[in-house]
Length: 495
Image: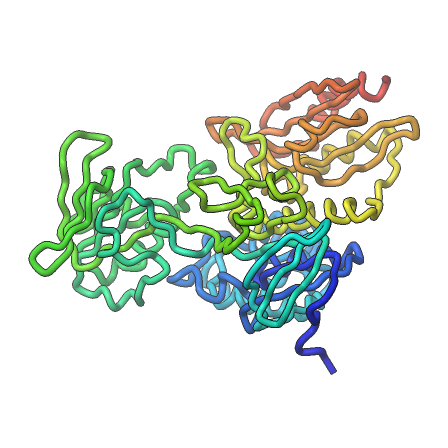
């Protein structure tokens, strides 16, 4: 009979807090290494943030149930941006639950896939066990919970970035409701609604309210930028309110303005803004004001044990391996791993806020913890004539480096015993850590959103960077690229 309350309080190598996609993926990756760990969660079932969000239930990341490669293979992950990474019957689960009305799953479909993943991947969780406090103990930590104390060498917090965050610079913000408190769309029928914020959560709400609200105003200081779409934080599927505005439709307005105040006015609410892309003061009367101003992580007392933060104190500042920069031994998984910023070449940020990116972060994190615990990573030997074909294959279809552009890389090392496959590593770590001669292959994006392959060669402690030409259909495996790589790696293979 299945143990319904696994992981009693006690000693573990690793304790994972959270049963959302980040926690489930981290547990699966740790189990692959054979690392003794516990997973605890205050929830009563898997799913994490997808038990509540997105508010209007349609995700922004897509999954292609039928693709040119077999479902469940590594290459298929490139076409499925929502499933967690598993083996056998635990692989590529989201397509199984999609009704194909859209190319993106609904929130209930995503939640169902996560429940199935936990079951099929054998991820056990001690549910209804709430983390309440943290303290240092020797070379590790004690996590205080509603069930007792868990002692561990390493703690992994997969706690999400889902709590309301309101800029402290908005006078009268208490007169508005945050995204997390948004009501069903029908509750706004015939209402004048002002939405503060122009990222995904703001436009998600606006798009859902189009059939209901009498008038919609979306306002924030910065203009909507969709000219470099791959670098935009906004997804096109939410842009109908913007389209109606720019085409001159009445009743929907997208305004660039800094919020000066939210105040009561004649039984309603007035939003006062100062124009940012043109001068002048603007005033909007509303029945409801919704703050789509972002989210923060529920760090509780982690700052008290030394965890430094970034992004307006909203998330922890992290190393390339998703470890707290200021408190070694504390790691973070899931969308909170956005605190690891990567090289930010050309200003491109990692895709760590979505499942498709942070599922790979969890694998990197687990591998790093395994090495810290003294477990050896398998590094298969490669023959010289295997190097270029391997790198070309990775540049053509490796999901890790295609989804986590400018952030993750496939590495091959060279030492006295020959070439070794170093697997997927954070590009920032490769560039900064030094070490034996090696080559790293990755996919990058320039300021104009042109995607191209790049190779970094480290020889004698020096790194050479080689940007390869782009291709209109990203076919980086042809003879021209082989000649280019042969030329770039000749000295590396000869030395």
